[in-house]
Length: 275
Length: 123
Image 1 (cartoon, rainbow over the protein chains, first blue to last red):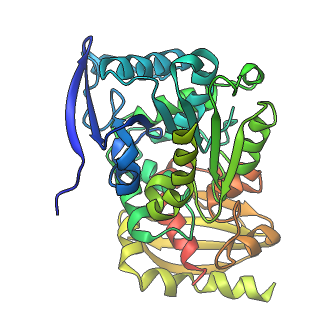
Image 2: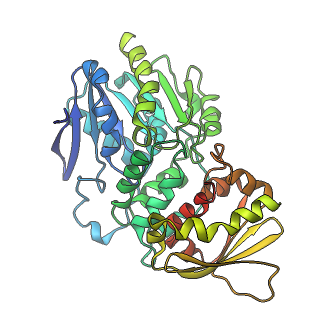
Image 3: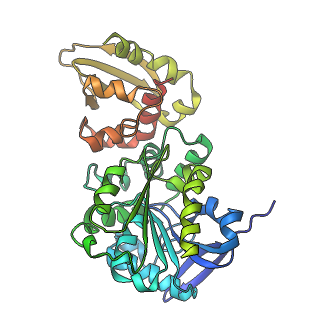
């Protein structure tokens, strides 16, 4: 069996970005979680039904997966910010010629869709935030994930493991953990800088206009990082935002239980296609 | 009360009999405290195996880190399957229902092992 997914590299400025894609039609740009990479989306990238109407594209952020870190990475701490993340997504979409894409992001990706809704609504067809919260207060110290005396892969894997549902299949949960164990030193911590510190968007989301660009928020009930309560609190400030709580799923719905997640995603994509 | 006590005492059986858990603690040689409401346990790990589980009260005993939570929290945590928000040590942490004390480095170094060992008590 050969999967329909094809992988390529695109050069954007000095950055060499790896991405995978499959299908044809409306562009659907997928954003992975903090400290992981685009492999999380393989369930969506392999879904025959979605591929009939969507061109699904998932890229690895710089520093992640098969994308290169910037030149001179060894001399700096990586820190993701709202501005750098937003620019990266829009620049990548332009480089690939994705016209008014749907953007589907999870966790940090679920957070950034809120900023895309504020800043780029007219350039986007729809936004789907998974595990989408406007802010998550620091409840653990992410510095331990990048420490010479703690194995980063094991610690990052341990952190990701608990965020998943006890009901999700072991096989998929452990593959999700594997991705976390492969991240570069300090990368997960650098992404969490955006998630836990810099990217607090609570005060601004009231200005999101879902009539310009529809916003869907789907959250797994077992997520305690971006919990259903966090998603509902954000949605309460955004008129027209559509919330779905996904039963039996955790923080990584697309990779911890692809089949169950697709059951929630397909109707949303159908609705967007029919608009 | 009795139910939880029995659960913690199962730790050597459920962990030592499962090489898929033991391997994640292979370099661990530590004693840590597990506090379940008013009851304290000292758990000694040698090379990923649970060497002993002692029940307090203790007088001037040393431990490298402590995991403390109310009995009701552990009741929820040990339920099978656990309800959302009660299914993981860090889920309890986000709720503010568990306290980690002592050497956080050791706790983080063996986070996956500790999560798997405690979750195994649900079996």
